[in-house]
Length: 446
Image (tube, rainbow, N blue to C red; front, side, top):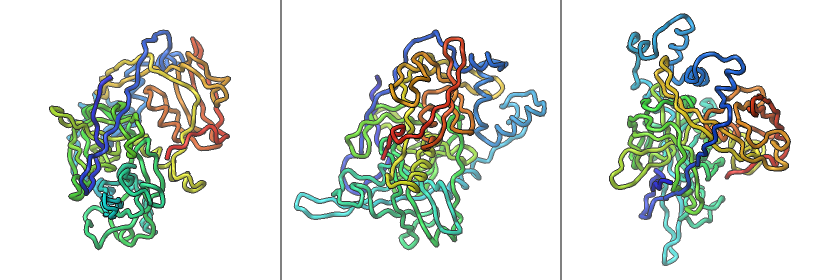
């Protein structure tokens, strides 16, 4: 297992060590006697290669790709790269400028007691992304990192221990003391390093050009794709840096949560875009200016450069919406993740290249190892089943081609929902409807 020393990319305005975190990477077993989701799809009539099927599963990640897909439907026979060359497309500067308007500086003030029992104030500095905005009312929900608004070093006498009671944000271009906007902590999930802030009745918001970020499908990211990290680097105000996607999805080890005690295993996008302290909670945006991740960490190791990390938008925003929804029905201030009641592993992992899109896709075969008695899956799923797809209620069917897609989906389930699961069992494809009616079917993260 590789050991990586990762530091959360926040800033403290007092002396002290930044938070280091640890964890363990997923293990892979070598089981080859199962049909993967593509093989199931071919049994059901799908034609074409595995790469073509994988390409057809993802949403078009950019406007250029959407135009290419439409052109293909109209008979265009060239590749995606041919299409881009013919159109001469691309003005990333305009997209970045739009994305700037969804970025905010975040300042969280804490108090701590010194050796002589004197109390001093200090601030944690980070970034946030406007997730939902009602300009007419001056209201907004802002996504940031949990470690930006939590400090293990504080006195702990806050309304919620170690979570700041004094949070302010600043809009891009309005980073002056007289233009501060008070924000309150709505809720968070420390084990996923996501928190949501609430702004209400702000005249600055009403009269600003602020905008909510447009979300992209982070599962459609390509290695090598151009991305932009926008954040409050070193507490000097919002700035943008450029890089590429180095790894589209990986689990990080060696991570501690904001409390400096809880060990985490986090799903992350790796980028070579420079990530500095203060970038925490800021957005990672694609060439269209659409949000693909929430920046939260960087690798600090002698001789290793340009390892920055962001929580994929599909996961980060699913958790954020979960927190918002929960705030309307209970006082947990956390996120409720549905519990499937199975242990799964990756049995096979392969890469496939699609000539048309010019993209390499990775497909994992996800196998059920064990089913928990009494869980929603008991009596339905069995050890040896391959999970092929998940569908929450009447929503979009999600073909499960990577392990992390299961966890992302579980945060979308609410009490009373039905989850439709398609599995491959031997040579048979089976569908099950799982009911999430009991509180015991959910795990609270806060």
